[in-house]
Length: 532
Ligand code: F6P
Image 1 (tube, helix red, strand yellow):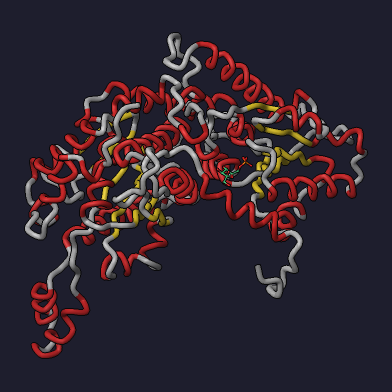
Image 2 (tube, protein in one colour):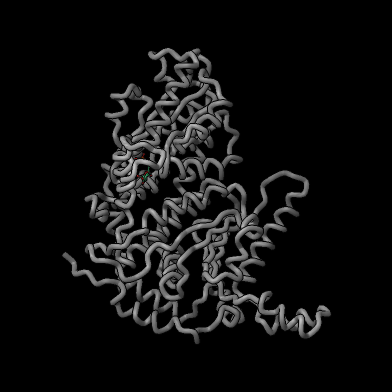
């Protein structure tokens, strides 16, 4: 067993602590160095990363790379690609990378797994195209026109986020809907617009035991039956995606409607598996394969790039610098494109269900902060809601801005809309970094004609500390390939941070206790009188 050195005792960690002191250059100072800013631009897989607004200099970056090297992140990445059981508490491999790499001739995970993956991927793509061609008939022999994804967490967020993001990519003859929440209102809001004869349900559940999903599925079956669907034709309206195909078959799903994923696919990493079926129905098989290719290209990038040019590694390192050495205990994600409205919830599960841990892999209690609180939303809306806190609050918040370079809508004033979006995104990054001192504010107010006394009184309230760090990720457009690359970028960032902290990113024991209590609470009155 390799001896485990807790990260907080590693030499590079200690040197980073000595660097992150009040006398460290401010962002305003750092940004005055034009060659520095130019050197902090990176392109990979169609994504451009500008990390010049991160409060780092050459010395800090060298110390961060020394940390990555000390933590053997390359060897840990190879172990994942090789299919080693790096998810030690569940004794499982972690091979979501295999799901998008079945085209590789010599895959590090072995051709047997690639064969399994390819079989399911082809089955998913064929079925999606059959559905899109109107060749899936319901109990009245009318073609299915609406598909409802029933699932939660990784069985919902990935397909839901990508379907929304890529809705303009392909005209979709099939409308895809998503129901994850078990409160009846959620299902009713979807069903009251649909007809049983032309509606199908994709039941997405790796475990096939998730209470919410089971409840919604039973309700959906009842809706079909009440709508006139005979019991012996119901299987036409039901598809299942699960790591327990035998359970689905035993519950009346037919084999051609059951799609398989495997235990070595984590729920929050499962969009690349058959869990992507509803997305493939929405955008078509070709676009779905492009999404996989974007992620595969990012996989190739992390395996071949030098550390200084490894985009996910750089994101991981500046994230650790902000989280562990400057006390930014939250990471704010701000997409400046409305079609990315579900990106934050998707990244929340990916990051916080992976790295929301408090035990090192050897079982000892961590002595460092792990997953930041990841939050955010569409940036333009956020500017008019919670950016106040980021600018003048008491939390130091790091931000990832996500911008889209090209405008693709055909509104007559689309270019003007886009100009306003992008100038706001850039202005926010600048304001957060540069701030405005009390002296500068006072002079500005006086220049605007305010009396000296009033300016002196108001200036502290209208000044900005600055030094709020950010990274800006630029996509050329929101297309399957670029979205796949962006998703894999964050997956690998999460991996690298876990590898450096020395935690297991791939189990999620934290979700079990609530489920246990939920089962025990079944017998208690739910009006609060029951006690425990
Ligand atoms: O409870 C957490 C979780 O297990 C997630 O990891 C997972 O994505 C979600 O619930 C749904 O699980 P399943 O796909 O097994 O229904």
